[in-house]
Image (cartoon, rainbow, N blue to C red; front, side):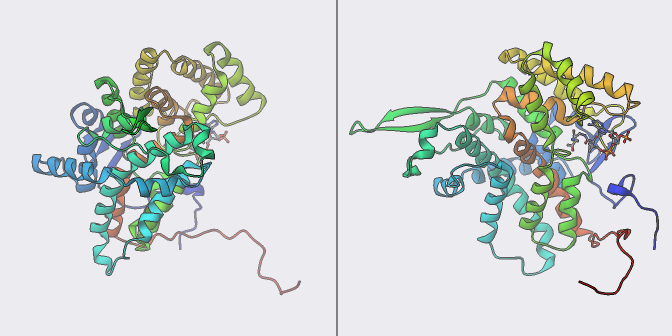
Length: 408
Ligand code: ACO
């Protein structure tokens, strides 16, 4: 039996994978051998989903099939969406997304033989990749809806935003997200409200697509490893996704983008940033959200791209977030350096809020949009784990009382 203890599995290689390579020394990221920088330039998120899930870039026939399949499955009935929104106040949006997954899962027959699992993983991954944008856009609208809807016991009248049948994955999400509530009149003159989608600009579509690709996978991160642990028990794919959503939500992982955004919102003006950071990091000894990474000690390759996008989007939308983020980054890095930490660069979650916010995503839903992208990696990892399965079951170093006689 091995004896060294690796708290948090730090530095442990916990399995083989052919999906994603993180080259932390060169600050580079590869999906199935392709540099993510090239993927954001030449591929769409849909193509990257295929690449991760199937191992190769899609041929035209695969691309067409996937595009049609995602468009077909992005439509969700008003009834299914309303049933989800029926929980009048949704305080924990990630749990609402999990509820959607669980509700779909209970209606499906469990797998009959474990041989089916890899195929089931791809089928469910594709289904959720298509459905998550519609669910998340509706959760956001519901979360931001005028209070009168919440008071209305006949909430059946609450308008649902439905996807566009033809736009790309990224453009469709923005189309639903930025839909406006408008009042129309029926032939008998009674008013009713509905959401009218809004087309994003091509720059916004590309920014969304790029951001989805950058978040699509990151080898054995906490949520993916949690998912692989569940898959290693040969649990049904629905269970694996529920496990991974929970792990992603934490502020040390996918929840960090929301925490960073709360910081920017609290600071409000760039000139308040330095003092705010000093107060939190030095006076209150708080952790700097959006800084540090288990693998990247010099630079997170995703951060530079998101920083550039965030700068341009905030400029176009006249939002202060990028200017605030830059000031926060400057002061935070200086304080961390004074503490002897020059190895805690801004990570993927630090500038992504600037992008997300400028695209219309409120802070508490940012981790859900992370999930909307990471479903690509989860699909690939679930399939890989089922195919080359060894039960994941490490040891613990017992530090409790020595065996002792029973006494109350
Ligand atoms: N702010 C201040 N100090 C930090 C930070 C931070 N964000 N991150 C690490 N440190 C310090 C720790 O205090 C510790 O210092 P010490 O050695 O002087 O005691 C040292 O760096 C090592 O910290 P650990 O927490 O042990 O490092 P680990 O590799 O476990 O943590 C993590 C990585 C969780 C990402 C951490 O850097 C962190 O909490 N960051 C903030 C949350 C965050 O942004 N998470 C998103 C990560 S990216 C993603 O998951 C998508």
